[in-house]
Length: 188
Image 1 (spheres, rainbow, N blue to C red):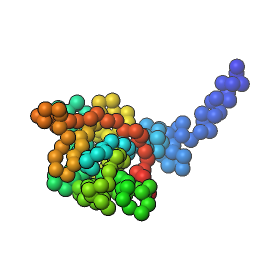
Image 2: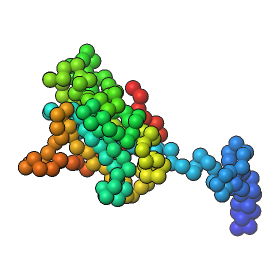
Image 3: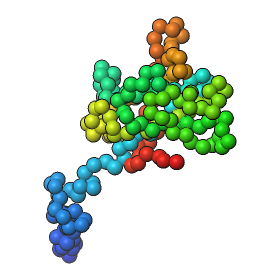
């Protein structure tokens, strides 16, 4: 038992990170925890939004108080080119181009339907959405996979109008959660 305790003391003294040092030998700024361990590296949420049929575009919103207020808002269409995220990446495929497997990155705040090879016949079944850190509300205050209050909803848009409920009296919204949180956004 005495040898084990001695070995543990020697190990604790020998490890610089235990004494408040980062692996490169520089002192830590945050109570002995290395800086690279202080923040979550997986800070980009990834969404797959189901569109399909006539729906080529969407509006995506996030809230930390169940929509009493919002922390995030984007709209992919040009007719309402207002967004809280100036660098959101949205990818789609186009079934009327030479290579139908290719991912196309939509221009920000530009109608996806107008970016298709055949705007009448092409169908955008799904889009991948990668929000950025260029948000109106500082992303560090809410955009985290550990934020239990963070909820997202989206609605579909066809270039003319939003998806509506059965009576046409309210916009139809769909709850959605990130399928993943990543270190960096996909760049095909």
